Length: 116
Image 1: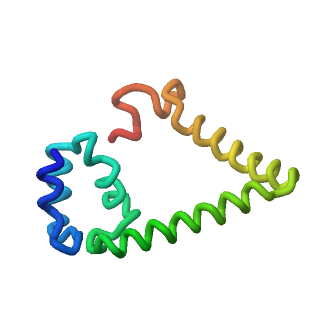
Image 2: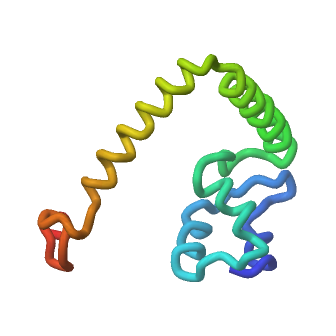
Image 3: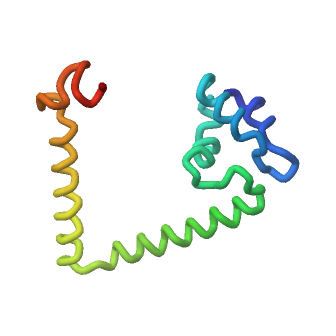
């Protein structure tokens, strides 16, 4: 989807009103590199489709504050808290890697059980 087409989906307040056709145009035509960053913020529900330009600016500021708060919290954990956190993350990743390993018989091949 080129920039010109992307812009047609917005009304004067900066709201996207025709969500169904936007999704259809994205699905069938893809997104040009110039549009991707902004479009994915809507498609991934970072911003509501009906939000105005002003509302999105406020949301962006709120989300930035929230991110900085989380980042500060993470940076100020004790060494023990960091170790505990990473153990749980590593455990989850280790399980997921095995669960999706194409060399495992359950996941191997194009006609594996997951594709039927």
